[in-house]
Amino acid sequence: IAGKRLLLLGAGGAGSAIAVAMALEGPRSIRIHDPDRERAADLVARVRRIAGGADVAFVSALDSCDILYSLRLGGAPTP
Image (cartoon, rainbow, N blue to C red; front, side, top):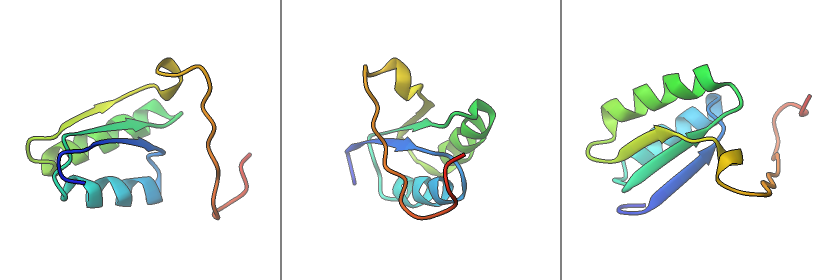
C-alpha cells in the first residue's frame, strides 16, 4: 500500500474501516467515492487527520470513467 494510489468506492461502515486501515499504511493518495457526498466528505475529513502526507480527497467515480462496474459482496441487498 505504501506509495500507491487508492480509490475507495463506498464510505459506509466497511468503507470507513478500510479507509482508516489503508491510511495507516502510507499510500500516496486516497480517493473516496460514495453516492452520499456528505458521508464521503465526513470520511475524507477523518482520514486526512490520520493519513500523514497522503493526498486524501472526494472523487466522483462517475466523472473519472465511462463505465463503472462494481460488485456487491455480502451485506444487505442493494436497494
